[in-house]
Amino acid sequence: MDAETLDAIDSLRNEIRRLGTSVNARFDTVESRFDSLDSRFDTLESRFDTLESSLAARIDDAKADMKRHFDIVAESTHDDVRIIAEGLVALNAKVDAMRRS
Image (cartoon, rainbow, N blue to C red; front, side, top):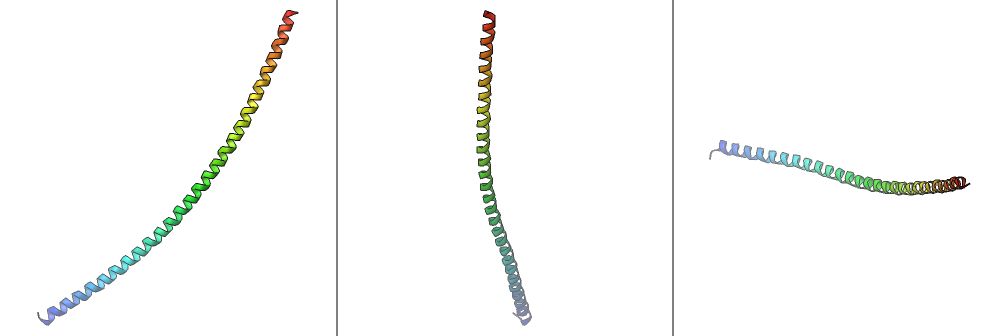
């Protein structure tokens, strides 16, 4: 090969090496950015897990409070119905007594 061809081949070889180094550097930068994003997603996932646990606990507490409240209201209603029924029984007894007299 002549000197001019060898110089051209060396020039191309150097250019390919330079481009390879540049591409590797850009891939390293992109990889670093993906690693940063992975870390951020891990942080967000952890925060969502904490939030989910907190909300589940709050919902369980609210559910227990509503059940207690419902039980109290149901018991109160039961007592009110019992009182009304006793009043009706007493009223019927008075009406019956008045009819007999």
